[in-house]
Length: 137
Image (cartoon, rainbow, N blue to C red):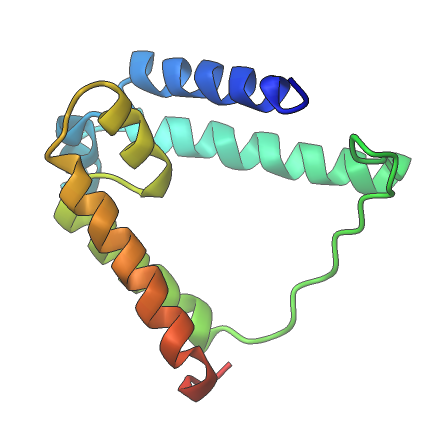
């Protein structure tokens, strides 16, 4: 019962992503072909909402659901790793047609072949955790 609010938010988020066609392979393909503004608009709204949310949290020093103050540390300097990480993330997204969040939505919608993508995402996360100490951070 304690986590039902998170389940409800996740359900609403999944419905919104599905109805906006953000989980559609065709829409993602259009985005990477630069044929449509649809996905760029959705991503732009998400980034803008995130920026406004973070600024409100910092300005009003908001607390989380347990009453603990939310602290958002500044990012450390460094661009090379962000470029490499973003490139790998984007390549994976372009190859499979789904970023990590919609993988769950697509499985929930009955597209069981996305289970292979889910397995690949888990495998990639495992491999990163295994080799992260050897990477330049």
